[in-house]
Image 1 (cartoon, rainbow, N blue to C red):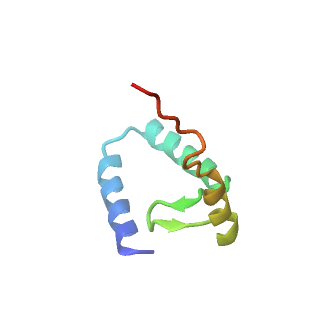
Image 2: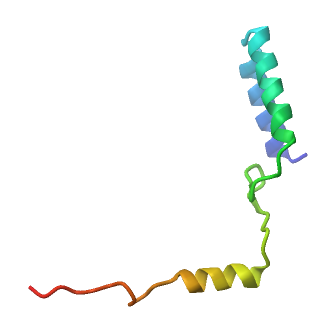
Length: 77
């Protein structure tokens, strides 16, 4: 676990200490459910990019999505 993650956990723990028992149980349930889903593309705690595609596929998508000069029209005065 990174220092930043530990610091975040400590901060959240301080906030949660004032919550009711039922609110804490609800949060636990939601956290457990979030562990059952696939991870997002970006890990927010470490800012890691977790791509599902290769770098070449991502570059090709970006290049193909560009539309310089294709849709731009200049209207006369």
